[in-house]
Length: 300
Ligand code: CP
Ligand code: NVA
Image (cartoon, rainbow, N blue to C red):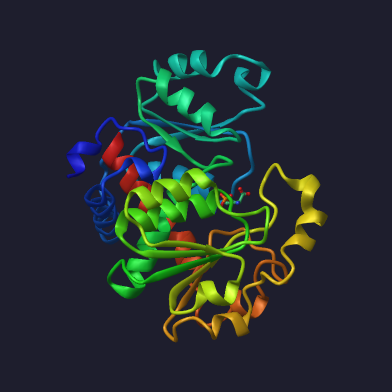
């Protein structure tokens, strides 16, 4: 199954079969237990048009641990930031590198990069999707419950993280419920793809309804990167959508709390829940490293 991933792009979990996703999780566990130098002398370029702590460092460390090397390419410092086209950048970088990871705004730029690159392109977050985080979250859920079924509730902005989790849940066969205020619902394209996959997906305005019976309660920031001007407006719109102890009590007794981080305590999540016994956010952050090593080893 892993053989089918060689040379592919990793743009969205919706592009992968269930078995391919499960084999990536198995490889992540294998590499977590026993590191191997599978990418000796391979070089990954990492283009960043947005900030990052986890994505940047886990990709860089992951490449080093696999025996390769990673180059940080701030969009400001390469000609892409001065107007060189995505297509030209893709073709030039393909002559030097073995893979490209990109974090940027428009999903169409990542798709364009992948179209013109002759090496694998990995989506390190766009305004639309965050598939690497989605894979690490599946790993964290499987680490905790041993299986990937049951209900995942996502509370808050129907943003890139919501899309990634919709695809992740739909592909592995988990039920997903999303609670968002009016105007901040999940992307209709993501919901349609999930429905076409036969997924059990529900969208509501009521966080209490969404978390009922959930094994995983997930939230993300109310204001994503690039939306900073809307911060105050969003704080008002998301009033009542905080994941706090009371909301967690309505989920299954065994429920865990996940957040991709960075978190804003007192906004989308209370400090008590983030630091509490149900929180797995730092295991989740660590799993970025293991899941991405699997992606890198399989693709490159
Ligand atoms: N979760 C996540 O992608 O974090 P960074 O923005 O720090 O990479
Ligand atoms: N939705 C957040 C995720 C950060 C990892 C953002 O795009 O800023």
